[in-house]
Image (cartoon, rainbow, N blue to C red; front, side):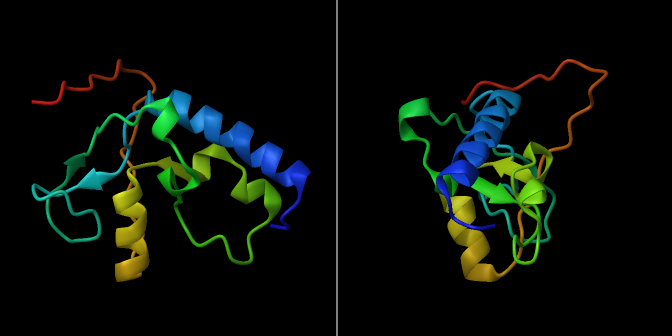
Length: 114
């Protein structure tokens, strides 16, 4: 994706849709220790990320963006809303995080933090 004002505006719109879909809560699946890039049973992280704390590091792609079209990069279905720490974990391990799967036929219950 070429870095241009037009592409950045399109990407921002996609990110807004992702935030709305996630209800400002991390969509990344993590183990009991909060690790995302590990082969253990996982559950949704669900950490709330306030609008004034969101940066581009809170948006992770399901696959590498290299070689992908601008349309693919800006498609909300290919973007995961998550904690910045999960993004850094991806970089450190070289593995991609997993996203919670939504069932569009059911209401989504997001438990309160304990």
